[in-house]
Image 1: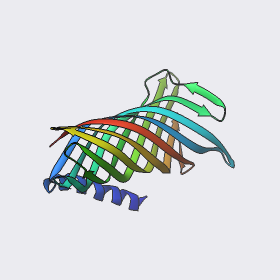
Image 2 (image 1 turned 90 degrees about the vertical axis):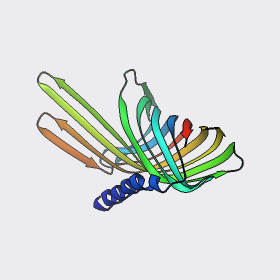
Image 3 (image 1 turned 90 degrees about the horizontal axis):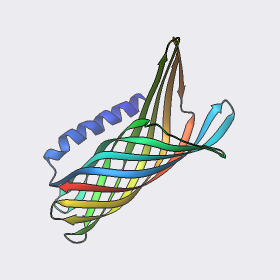
Image 4 (image 1 turned 45 degrees about the vertical axis):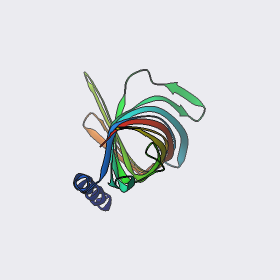
Length: 209
């Protein structure tokens, strides 16, 4: 975990510094629909298959070292709201707004075929964080979940003057999870008991500078 924290700190530092040297950048809003399949060990020795469906919106940016793209870095922050969950053959819909915090950063590449049409791809690390609490009289319950994934994105983009539209697909592999549950004065920590894969078609609208 210490190595992962150091890697994330280095990646954050690179994101902060590299726009100074970039030749082209973009920033905008991305909206996506995510389907996540996981295998979760709820009871020791017994795993259950889950399917989560979520809607997400994020503020994303990318900076490239060439005027027509080339290599660069991308980054983003957003929220995701779970719409439904299926456990084995049982499905439930979420009726309340219950958001998670999303962060992602990675290496990016873009190639413009013309001044209008291009392709973009990226590879990086994303994290999803979720908090919930119940503070009824006589009962206190707090939950914190953290998930880390490696992701890959590919998209077509269409640029009109300073406006860029991306239509793409993201796929990712959940490789680390951590959860902390507090009931009253007792806390329980669970690490690494979930594995999963997600697929997210997305559309983004950005300002190119």
